[in-house]
Image (tube, rainbow, N blue to C red; front, side):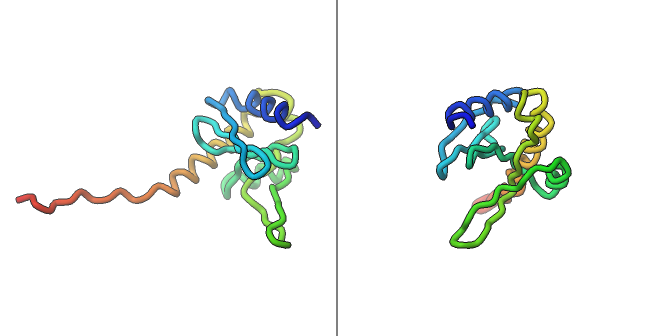
Length: 125
């Protein structure tokens, strides 16, 4: 496998058609962002793309593996799946999978949005 810096650079290149990609070191790996949305992570020398209830079946049908780590002696599975092998070959092959990750990230962001506060009418006639 390529050294981590080469893998990160390669993954950023694969995701570039989707927007402005960037990487950030985290938890011994890297988090990957497209237009400031967290869409993927690199851990254990593998790329994992964000998935959710609407996209998980597509990843599973393609034979992708979930991101699992050891959390105090118990396996913890997060909502990220490996990219299909052929998607790692070129940005064109990655694009549909990257879009799924981007869509899942957008849904997650929308779900976390705090409700807007009603305007105060205090002091108004």
